Amino acid sequence: MLEHLKEEVYKLHLELPKYGLVVWTSGNVSARDPESGLVVIKPSGIPYEELRPEHHVVVNLQGDIVEGTLKPSSDTTSHLYIYRQREDVNGVVHTHSPYATAFAAVGRPIPVYLTAMGDEFGGPIPCAGFALIGDEEIGQQVVEHIGSSPAVLLKQHGVFTVGATAEAAVKAAVMVEDVARTVWLALQLGQPDEILPEDVAKLHYRYTHVYGQ
Picture 1 (cartoon, rainbow, N blue to C red):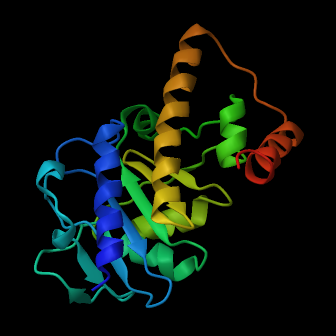
Picture 2 (cartoon, rainbow, N blue to C red):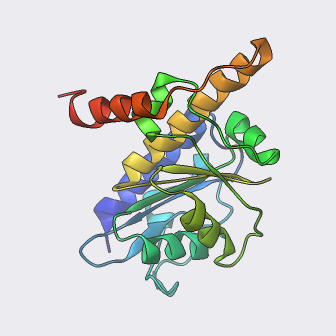
């Protein structure tokens, strides 16, 4: 079932340690199949080097296991809550990438200090409140605070990103850590100026409508 999507999600999971966004078994990627509405997600507690496409679990939006012999990620209920609330989202990623999570640890959003942030996020990266793992509370925090951004920090926890595809959500997770690292370095030198909202809007429009092929 959904073998192509399992293969895609498997390959996207390998991008997380490649870019230093996760360690050991932390973090997860999920993807929703637009046709069936079913979700493919990482199994809980499996090291990335041991992960295989067939290990991934297929669940419905209510959390019932449709296919798979392993337990799904402990963040599954939060992923599913996001999918139920956001019909435009077909990919969700959770990481504990160090620089972005450092901002999350102190409950601090990341203002638009860089043109790359205007490009990718179209505004600041917000920080949601604190929530425990295991039920929908994290998903509720994500939906409540993410706004139009593809990324949100969770206070004292980590990063959630969303996208129209799982690949887009993984890209956002990579970019969150990249800009968080640069902003942290800049803050060691002094206080950066925020880019004006009208310039952020121009940057984001160019990136989403003009840039690339």
